[in-house]
Amino acid sequence: MAQALARQRSERGVRGLRKVSAVAPGLLVALAVAVVATLLGRLAPIVGGPVFGILLGAVVAAVIPGLRAPTLQPGYGFASKPVLQISIVVLGTGLSLAEVVRVGGESLPVMLGTLVVALLGAWLFGRLLGVRANARTLIGVGTGICGASAIAATTAVIGAAEIEIAYAIGTIFTFNIAAVLLFPPIGHLLGMDAHAFGLWSGTAINDTSSVVAASFAYGGDAGDYGTVVKLTRTLMIIPIVIVLAALQARKQTDGGFRLRGIPWRKIIPLFLVGFLLAATLDTLGVIPGSWHPVLSFVATFLITTALAGIGLTLRLSTVRKAGIRPLLLGGALWISVAAASIGLQAVTGTL
Image 1 (cartoon, rainbow, N blue to C red):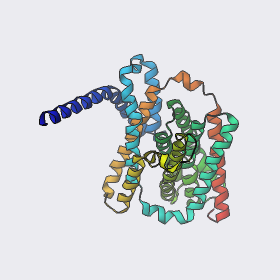
Image 2 (tube, one colour):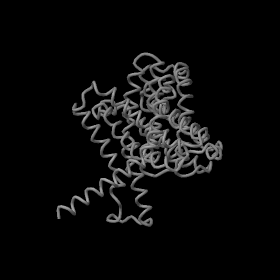
Image 3 (cartoon, rainbow, N blue to C red):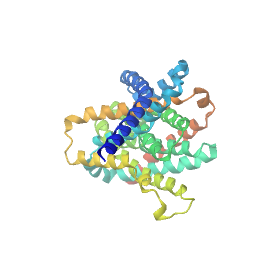
Image 4 (tube, one colour):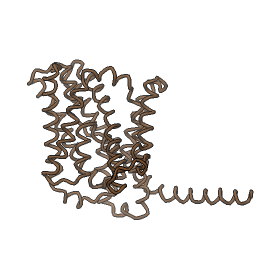
């Protein structure tokens, strides 16, 4: 009996080592790309490390044919899936549920309204433009919630193809840059006070780094308020991912909604439970405030690694075939959400 158990442990150890040896080469390449992308992101914070990750990964894979070797693919896959899910959990450590309660009262109507506009607009405009279902979902969620982080969380549930992720990231990146450049002068032209501009940027700009750049450039307390609104908006990931996972599970049960037949682990993925637990621990003060900068860096680096893994599997020729339609969809959503945010502020008296 003891010999059989020892043999089983030995076999498990060998299988584990084989898995590690299969994953390690590609994962190391993705990590190396992520390091360079992170450094570039520090030089150009408006762009950010995650966007550099997917762009640099795609470029180096095109320039160095050896990086397309089959032996590297398992590592790229590990970076783009398990590492991606871990990054979402770590993101939760920087999100206090207490901040959501404090800010939510006055910002929730605008936040929910812009989210509805983004999701319905993605469905409507995406169908009119002929954009693939997963691509329009990623662009809609990325526009309505929090850019690359929302795209990462959604990808972990719906299983979008790498090329669809590239469309969404590219689109979100384009309009992040436009927002940073255009929002402050438009806000001054409209005579917005700092509070109103913080709410506008926090609900209408996609990525957290771009919200920070635009709102702090505006002046006053727009930066602080816009950042808190943006962090609160990030929590919208949770219900959206649960709904998408439920829809995905329903497809896997032949279109019929059978309660016992639904894979509940896909409806409420483990990484989402981890995200909520991390946010709860932060709210309770278990996670020291001094840890937040390090954890934020780790989360961003993990997302950058995941996107580098995705970029390394992309082929630029395939990306070009997408044409201009995803970009048009992103532009239509960006304008719609920005206008809806201002309109909802006017209606709710926060403008």
